[in-house]
Image (cartoon, rainbow, N blue to C red):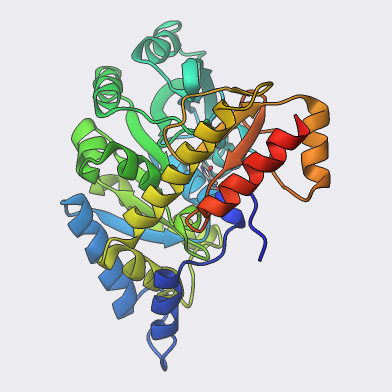
Length: 341
Ligand SMILES: *Cc1c(COP(=O)(O)O)cnc(C)c1O
């Protein structure tokens, strides 16, 4: 079996998610979310976040983000995010499309993280009617560069958002990796710091497919079910989107797998740091390692069969670890890199 470092979505389905799907496959049950698996998965999420939130399941992160943002905005509003944010750079205009034209305003900041100053600047530079009215702050946790906002940084951003009457969306495609790294209760980096809606990724955590859209601010969830249906995101056999969440959440597999992926990235970074001619580009805080390598080395590595991306973020090669990345994979890649640099 071949494992790559291109993306955590190259990986297969983890045993816990697979077993739950198999269990959910017994017989008939009600469709469109009126089933016991969907109820149980939603209840588990409410338990883990320690709040009575509204939960929806959809197929992928692009839809989760786009529809969540659309539910926070009118078409004349704007969404503030980092210039490297997935919602800006990797969703093909989905958020703008589903919100009927809401504009995205880009902020800068080191390590793919926004700062209150950057947000402040985007809000304050205009206050006239000709500017798309800032309405949402969108934060990615863990970020597109594999870095993580601390709870204090999020609290400061949350306060900034409140000052400017911005709603807060969190793109949590790798939320599990952030929680595993920070070792905090999920509430401390979400609703307690002002996050209104979280798109919690299951796919990159080890599921086949599926993201949970979690509204901590329940009023904002009004008619979200209609948005999902219209966008083709209402699964008729919803139990198969929901059951893996039960498998992942019930006994902590989501954290186990995320912590493992993070540990493999840390191991890989430590190996690469020893190789002359390579330089690590960003702090390795989740499951991604960004490295600058000579172009011929990258080409030779690819010839040897390794897959990795070089179009994400701000340059360099991205090496991503998954729930099933082994130490042997890490060492094999490091050995090949040592040989080609
Ligand atoms: C992978 C990812 C998503 C979701 O992407 P889909 O391919 O649409 O599931 C969203 N945000 C970030 C930061 C991601 O890395």
